[in-house]
Image: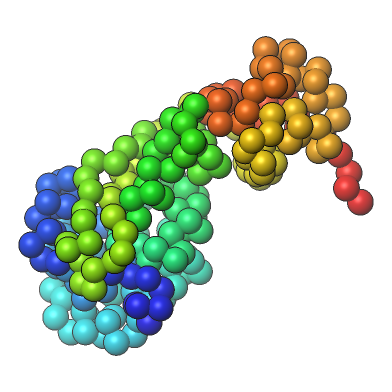
Length: 258
């Protein structure tokens, strides 16, 4: 199961580097995604109050539960479907070695836990981590960059080569760190509308913003002009705040496709 999902387990010699970045504290409660054999779970448990470890593979989950200390709870389940917020109290922290094949939907799901978890440290393929942490004006900047940039302070504090894992992946890996903000960088009333705008804006990256959006919204040119956003710009040049303002302005302006 782990190999099918693209999961690679961090070797014990590299865990100490990761722990220094996470900096667990005695009162911390951690929600861990993709616990595997417990390479991170057990050291975390030695430094934190409690660890709730979610693992999809039953054999791995059973093996971890058999050797885990009393402050570790192993949950057998799919992190894409389990009610993650119900597993830990508010103010917890999230960590994980994410299966690379499903990292993007998991990252989107973790955004819904803002306000419930303080931060996240998750292992990803380096290119994916760089996309999430990308700044406006760069080729990596996209939908998840905007959403994470709206609700979190994001960086990539540490990288790991293939030799740090078993089995070694064919790619470079990195930890994405996101510290969730108490308030977004700009108010957003309709999150689905913002995501719809972002999907359309980034649908053809070489096209201008106006060309990508003109068939989807009434009065687009007027709203762009009022916001002082040139329609000739590409989506990757707009800041998080500009996207949030544009989404609010275009509320109710969606063209009926039916």
